[in-house]
Image (cartoon, rainbow, N blue to C red; front, side, top):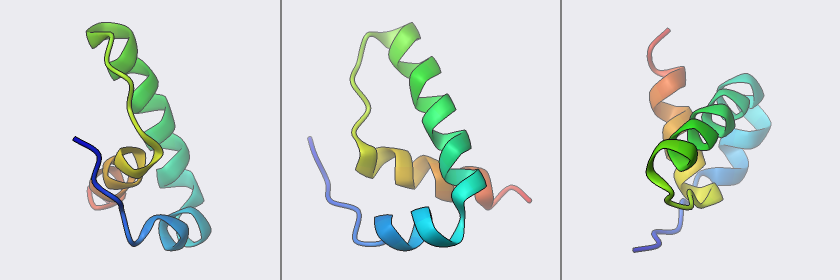
Length: 53
């Protein structure tokens, strides 16, 4: 199921470190589960990671 993330560009521009952490997290998830993580989902991961501060 692909869900468009309407905040993706804002997340990339305003929270680049959290987005980069989301990319790293998605790579780990892909490696463990053999599931492709879409960039929109990376944005949602970044929100969760950034919200932990």
